[in-house]
Image (cartoon, rainbow, N blue to C red; front, side, top):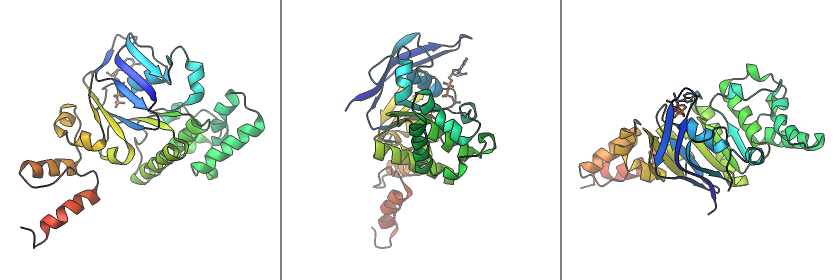
Length: 279
Ligand SMILES: Nc1ncnc2c1ncn2[C@@H]1O[C@H](COP(=O)(O)OP(=O)(O)OP(=O)(O)O)[C@@H](O)[C@H]1O
């Protein structure tokens, strides 16, 4: 499958001389994948995403996005890459929700009729039509995330980048955003890269996961592969989900179980073992 993003051994130095290094494994994302970057606070997730977007230039290393250098081709990629930043307050700048979402298509020179159609479509797809005339400042956290997502998706980008998309959201809003991301991925084939530190969401949002910590890309694989290495997750400063802890402990003690990704998988494995007729 086509490589959408490739990052090789990145080193960045911020103006105050803080150095962020991400070596170890290459970071590779292929078309139509949903990839999660998992790492503790300060491990460099935002720094990595900022390089992919072309906002930062590495001191060392290689970054390719859709076949080009994102710093040099920033203007070309702007149309093909949608971004939702960690702090959405900084990116929602229109006086109303409608105006904010219309910014990208207007900036790309589309005519008023095209702009109107694109904004209407995305408002309906994200189910926020009722918010269209609202002043963004007064929206709830979950509503702001959806408006930022609408702004990022209005141009139908091939690649969507989201930094901590679920931060501060309640379980219902998390479910709604997860549903939307899956929909974009399935219906439009959008490749999605997310940064996150909540391991519990991994099975619901990612096809593949990269674990980063202490300047290294330590591990990558499917959610099941990642959860089968709770030792590396712990070393990286991340807490494996309770179910994963419990089942790895059971497996270590000789109980015939495999690491489950969901409650249902756990239930299916445990029921026969707990039934009175089991040996
Ligand atoms: N503009 C900046 N100037 C100086 N240092 C910075 C800047 N931005 C980030 N850093 C530093 O770079 C390191 C990596 O930060 P980064 O924001 O990439 O981590 P993160 O994994 O996204 O963290 P979090 O999960 O807390 O958002 C941290 O030590 C941070 O203090």
